[in-house]
Length: 285
Image (cartoon, rainbow, N blue to C red; front, side, top):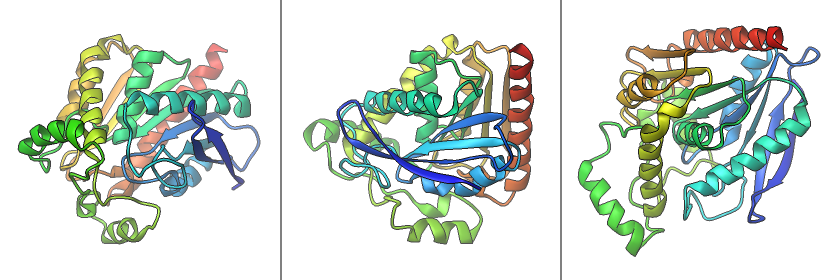
């Protein structure tokens, strides 16, 4: 399928790597605006883009600042709103590229926090919000003592790495774990203290304001996710004001349900929701 790599610039001029995968047959049914998770990069979603392309969707994604091929200190932000400003740039550019095509904002893990907070604070004109294992509440693998110490370190030593991401917790598929661990563009070696503290604050902001979230909402999460808690997804689902919302919990699945053993069902149900909502957008037009 047609693939394009391009460069964006954050509001502070920081270079941001971006890429797109176009649907192979004609005009797309919809455009996926994808925000990846902490420590990874947009290229990890090439297979998802290919799958959705077979269903008529174009996928656009960018590497968060400090991630992948984008500039900035690795996995570091001084303020979480830097991610929101970059997503503004990303979506503005995307709309120039795809015109009137319905846009779906999709975020995984910390990307889910970014997407949710962006939807709440910016109220973008997107057809729906899709959240994959969003970081709304921390998983069982994150010690509470680390949270307390991390908040202090965020002020005293903001760039100090305080927590590695254990790739064994992302999937039950050993091949997925091996690929993630060996990918040179991934950066799982340690979350800077400031980034971790900013993420915690953003999670609180999402839950405090999710009652203003009224757009169509699709959330999915693995019940055995130990990096981000499925209870956070349940709380976001219950608290949102959307009249069109779905929560899917996959028994036994780990953090990356789209890369876990039941990924075929996960992807089929995701594509079904996107197709139904892209058709309703066409009817409304």
